[in-house]
Length: 124
Image 1 (cartoon, helix red, strand yellow):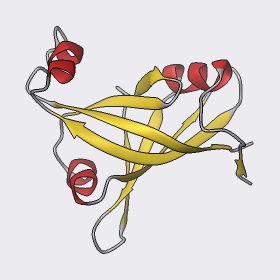
Image 2 (cartoon, one colour; image 1 turned 30 degrees about the vertical axis):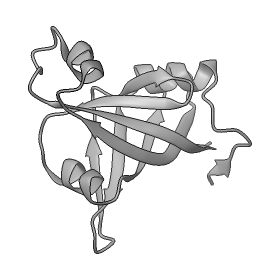
Image 3 (cartoon, one colour; image 1 turned 60 degrees about the horizontal axis):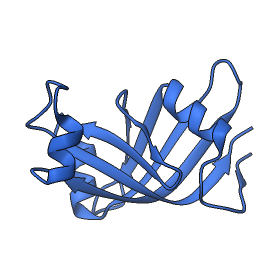
Image 4 (cartoon, one colour; image 1 turned 135 degrees about the horizontal axis):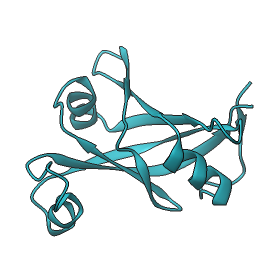
């Protein structure tokens, strides 16, 4: 059962889990249909934001453009801890930040997605 945590800032363990685990991002389309996608590039930007590179321009991209509502989850193999965050995602392309973040990744023409964390849940 998921337990809503009292704050919306990532602690050291949560940061470690999101940075080391395979992560998934859930979005919904304009009709409320869910979509779930693995995001291997998802990492912690800071204690209130996650970041990933969107390069498929598929459902995740279109759903974020439509409403920005997302959930991201990660389960740490070593720690056996799992967390989910919910928040609002924004897309950045051709901004100074996006260009700097993408420099040297081979993904310079893609989109940087930033998730502002609104809620954090412990899943175990």
